[in-house]
Amino acid sequence: MPRILIVEDEDIIRSAVRKLLLHAGYDVEDVGSVEEAEQDHDPDQFDLIISDLRLPGAAGTEMINRAPSTPVLIMTSYASLRSAVDSMKMGAVEYIAKPFDHDEMLAAVESILARTMSSASERQSGSEASSQNGDPASIMYGQCEPMQRVFILIRKVAPTETTVLVQGESGTGKELVARALHLLSPRATKPLISVNCAAIPESLIESELFGHEKGAFTGAVSARTGLIEAADGGSLFLDEIGELPAEAQARLLRVLQEGEIRKVGSTQSRKVNVRMIAATHRNLKAMTRTGGFREDLYYRLNVMQIRIPPLRERQSDILGLAQRFLVTQGDRVGKPNLNLNPEAMRALERHRWPGNVRELENAIERASILCDGDIITPSLLDLDGEGGDEYIPESLVEGDNEQLRTRETEGASDLSLEDYFQHFVLENQDRMSETELAQKLGISRKSLWERRQRLGIPRKKTSGD
Image 1: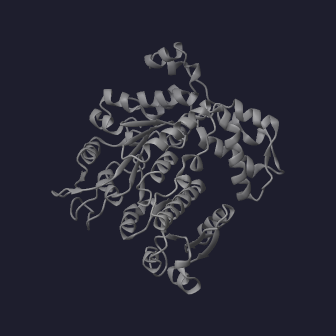
Image 2: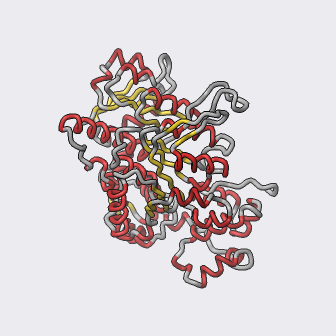
Image 3: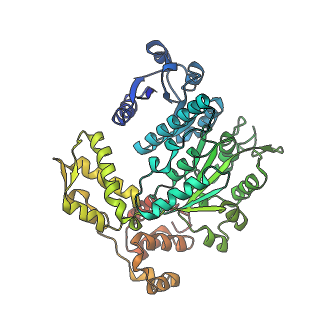
């Protein structure tokens, strides 16, 4: 059983991570500082150390020096992303941004331990490490034929240096595909740096990705290493790459073509060896026709494409996924015997799942918390309640959007309401205010904002807002 040491001064976070890892079957100890870790334990005797970046006394990165043979996972707030990059340079194997969800933490822990075991196996046998720990089926669930095809593609592409574009709706598990590609590659012992391009302000994206020199812009009081350089030797996962501004797209193209980066404010370039994995829920090909995405960059990224099917195309996987989430959530809330009654199973199979696997997980989590006994009923899942006010207004397919009207006549009944919503917002947000968009969609501004968040559609500021 792997031993994990948690170094975190906030009691609530430390307790939550401890319980999560204990339920996952790990042997866990926790302390509040680097000094306490050395007083009470031998850090080198653990298989993994999870440490907050900012601690009373010595910084969390000091654990890298005090336990040189143990991998260190650094936890940090997103505002401290630059410090996280610095910690990677100091020797941290990975970082995770707060707030993180439970599955993200477990996936990171499994990834690090798998890499560690693979390295140990290589040293002992002199042969390639077994790929079992990095097999996509051990990271993602999918018994249906579409997911089995995804797994086959991952196994074939992962050992190569090929750039991969992962496409799929929000909530389908694109980051899990990136993890599987990294773990099955020869770069598995090196960092996997994940970047959500939509979450970084446009004014900072170039500095975060490529780094900057001291004095390159107001506030650049010292030189900084970028995320691409931090991933040198490993893999870089660029989620929501369709949100990259034009200048950053041009710089990224140079990385792909020449294997070089140049920091903001620098005249010198340096070589980097990075395997690029990109993901998006948007239609990049269509964006190249409207000028929203560089065509040359699209073809550089789209060497190999992996499409993650939405949950509505994975009918036979729904109950299997639900059962896995029941076990996980049951452990978290102290209800290990939770089960779905037949009516709840039928409700899950009938639902369209516009939010995909993430929506299913949220439904199971909600039901697990609300359930008084061990049996989950359809009312606890509240699937009808989520979209009770949703409908397709006439204005959505008439007058304002000829393309959507054509799609409906050609068989758009196969598309979810979220498909209509997403397409309409992306097509019209540049010329409509948020109020106008909400009115056309027949929903409130609050509902519009919530659905943007759920689907990962960034808001475009307009003078009419």
